[in-house]
Amino acid sequence: MANKLFPIFVKAEQLKILLVGGGNVGEEKLSAILANSPEATIDVVAGYIKPEVEKLAAAHVNVHLHYRNFENNDLDGKDLVFCATDNQALHQGIRQLCRLRHTLVNVADTPALCDFYLGSIVQKGDLKIGISTNGKSPTMAKRLREFLTDALPEDMQQILDQMQNIRDQIKGDFQEKIRVLNKVTANWATGKEKQL
Figure 1 (cartoon, rainbow, N blue to C red):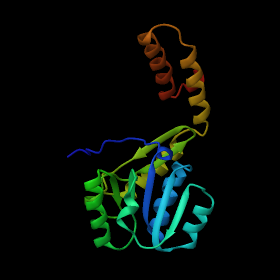
Figure 2 (figure 1 turned 90 degrees about the vertical axis):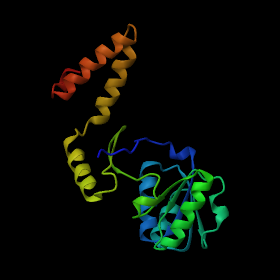
Figure 3 (figure 1 turned 30 degrees about the horizontal axis):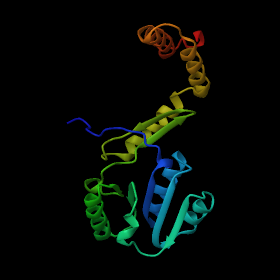
């Protein structure tokens, strides 16, 4: 059966995010969010918040730490919720509350409770590729990320900037622009990118 996940890239800096958990998994989730969207507004709620999470928060003015247990009203106004504790009963309760509020939730290490997953990310400048194994093998996603990171040229940002310049200079109707861009990118994909 095919992976039926719908891939999207969200503008996290325009959303309100709740992260429940300040331990190792919370640090992993917070790091992933901030690596991709350093201006995201994130409330971290946890009875214990490890020093590494405090350090991340100190470097990002939009990350707010709350040293206490989760409360239902923590969900007020939130667009995305991440559950990252070792308390499965708490995760299930938060999941149920999120369903009632139509708020998307990611529950660490529990794919059945997730509305979305965090994929492995390959990034070279403005190029960003998300990799999903539908929750079946994060290790395989990591290996594919490493492979693609090595395979993509280091000057990818220059290539993208050049493509933007070409796109801005193309005259003609929409069909003509598509024809020219297809020709240019076909050259790149066959290793003839120096012709750009």
